[in-house]
Length: 220
Image (cartoon, rainbow, N blue to C red):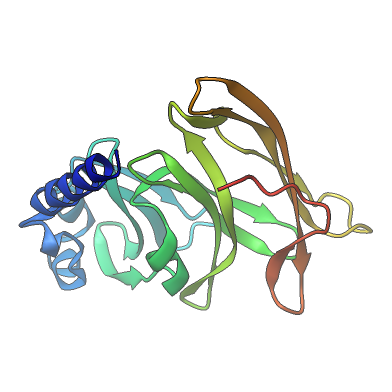
């Protein structure tokens, strides 16, 4: 069983390498500046674009190399079709995020500002929620936690945890609540269901969301 799993993983790596072969320059910033936004993004299978809500000359894009399997989060500074540069995702996102963006959108959070919410997943459809801040031309992660599971052995309802923002009452702290039910099939085919509840508190001094005591973090 172990040898079969290792063999399958190696085959996946080989397939991914072949898939990306010849695509190294798809995210070449100089090429995007030279060709413009439309022509550069036409090189991908598909592109989902989410402009910054305040009309800043910034757009977040999910550029798919392989449909529903492999893609890149790209944050671009541009004026119409003219690209002036990229905003690089944070180092921890580049290191730990999944290779596919399941969902992403901008949302304004009280005391925090506009935040890019990104749900990423791996080929096994397991992944995380990232909250990314764009400030002074740079991006940093404010929070990330496991929040995606959507395969035959383990899954959340709707494939990912649901989000509730507790930020409308100025007299109370800003909290992001993640909740849902995690379903798991064990080796004997038996299903177990577990309620998941996470609360993340905005820490203005650290300028990050920190987990609150008592949160039931989903199992890995």
